[in-house]
Image (cartoon, rainbow, N blue to C red):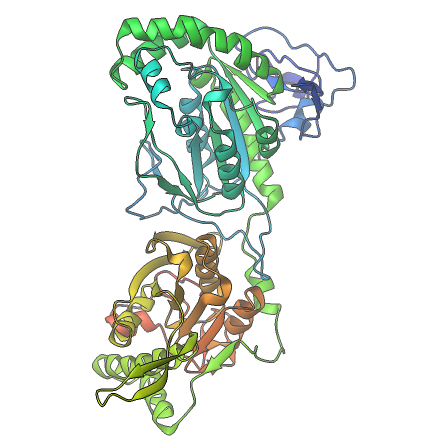
Amino acid sequence: MPFRPIASPGPGGFLSRSSLANLRLFPEEVSVAGCRRHRPWRSSVVVVVTSAGQGSRSSSNAEPVGRLLPPVGAGRPPRKRTTSQCKSEPPLLRTSKRTIYTAGRPPWYNEHGTQSKEAFAIGLGGGSASGKTTVARMIIEALDVPWVVLLSMDSFYKVLTRQQQEQAAHNNFNFDHPDAFDFDLIISTLKKLKQGKSVKVPIYDFTTHSRKKDWKTLYGANVIIFEGIMAFADKTLLELLDMKIFVDTDSDIRLVRRLRRDISERGRAIEGVIKQYNKFVKPAFDQYIQPTMRLADIVVPRGSGNAVAIDLIVQHVHSQLEERKLRWDLAALASAHQCHPLPRTLSVLKSTPQVRGMHTIIRDRETSRDEFIFYSKRLMRLLIEHALSFLPFQDCVVQTPQGQDYSGKCYAGKQITGVSILRAGETMEPALRAVCKDVRIGTILIQTNQLTGEPELHYLRLPKDISDDHVILMDCTVSTGAAAMMAVRVLLDHDVPEDKIFLLSLLMAEMGVHSVAYAFPRVRIITTAVDKRVNDLFRIIPGIGNFGDRYFGTDAVPDGSDEEEGGSAG
């Protein structure tokens, strides 16, 4: 049976058995819980990659497999990896070649500040100990995309009652039943991850059969891989998955793996593991898990040992990411708001002779580092004092030492938090601390990927309950507004109201002002000066130079913008 080439074609342009072995194809429509479902793919077939045999077709109008999994061009350049330095989130995967992290947030929003595309979500189903996690990690390594999240269904077991805890301790509780999982939490978590938002994921302790007190924080990514035994057991969950893969492994192999894992990693006795397997695991596989194989787009026999299947999956995901074009369009950002009047949300510090004089000193290329630091700090203090006047105040009455009433004003919010965009933004922290007693401080590191031009979140540390605070977001220069928009988006992801965010900068370009104001019209923008132009290298003209290099005395990056550390185009 002729197929269009997917991998390495044999003689005559068709696939040989050595390139791709047996292909079993299932019909397009399947029935789950009485509901007929259509596959999200255009093709009317499902590919099952096995080790030997010939292909057969069950759908008379099935399209060529080549359309199902389009090949990736042979000339594709290797993708440059960008790693996160977040201390609070450990690496997802270490390999002999690289370390892949999950703490970063891609810029999935356009110049309007709205989300352009969702992440590509892959569902991995299969029996217990079938090798789902191993297959997921092999896919992650082969994909070689900057941000990937691996979400395990094992984190979402329900909290057990005391009676259920006692049953679990004696291996009499069924953890392989759909009712054992918190599907509502799974669905809400996956929805937020696909939108690029931060989520709190529970950490399950298999030794005590309970959730740990601390939950871990994850961000959405270019690709989200969700794996679990019941990954295809819920209709709403299925609709969130863009690609569904079933890992099919022999039952004897799964039993041996489960024995090894539960005894060595989870502290179980061999008798208890075998009892639980015979009483719950095997019946649940036959009743709930194996029937969901027909829902899968790809079935992978032998799990991680099937390199051909992994290659096909990676090719398809790459093609989907290319179609979605998850790219930051800096050209659209630059041209979106030309010739528009400055927004009403912008407030510029009054240009008094004193302010003008300090700008003259710090803009002068001949100014020494000591003078640059001194007068920059003076401007920062004036800027922050000016910004605080925009906070909400309410009337209050106090008694003076003379016993007289004084009608005054007091801060009407809960708390003030400062968030600095590293590196230059942290230079404004001392000025904020000097005028705001007990202010809380958070930090964000955003850098531009030199290969894609995208701003990327590399480090994040925010105070708890920041959603209740007024947040002063600090960066010393803003040229294009890309990093500032990323930082604002991160704060919104943490449920900070847009009208409680104040963006402070010593110097901004009109382009950056328009970009931030158009995307987030309720964010207050406060600066000491606005320059007209940005050049082809996205430097502010006439500008101030690279603030971080001049302040810290470091060497400038060749052809870098005014923004910090590798060209964070903020």
